Length: 154
Image (tube, rainbow, N blue to C red; front, side, top):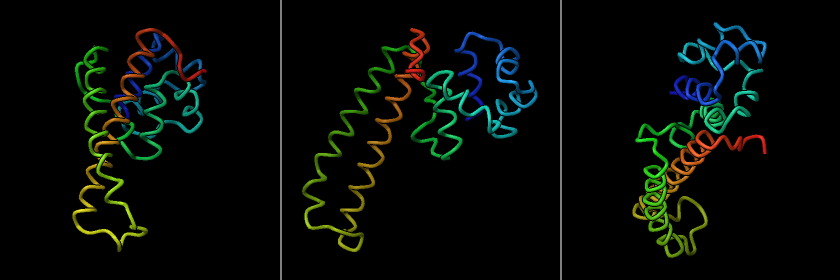
């Protein structure tokens, strides 16, 4: 998954992989191995990849944390309007899940205060919030690539 994100980030840069490797002073082999998930992103290349574009930043974050659910590349129709609709849907679902939290969390200060139902509601809210954040990242990555905004340099 991370390798595919690296490949897409470099492709979105408009430069061939060999040129990117040369610009970063890395061997083609090291970059291709990372793109094929055969090795991690070279340590010194992480900041350069993260600054390349938002998709590169997501790849570095996903590899560093292992949290694909939050930073992963969504395999959906990448048309901006489609992703925008997904963001709106995920936002509605997260907002709905969050609405139940104030009542559930009243006088609950530690895990032993939670009932099984409380825990279930909190887990659902966490999942929905994560889905919303991931769809937001994917929308920003698509907008960044399509309109060449270079969001990671600002």
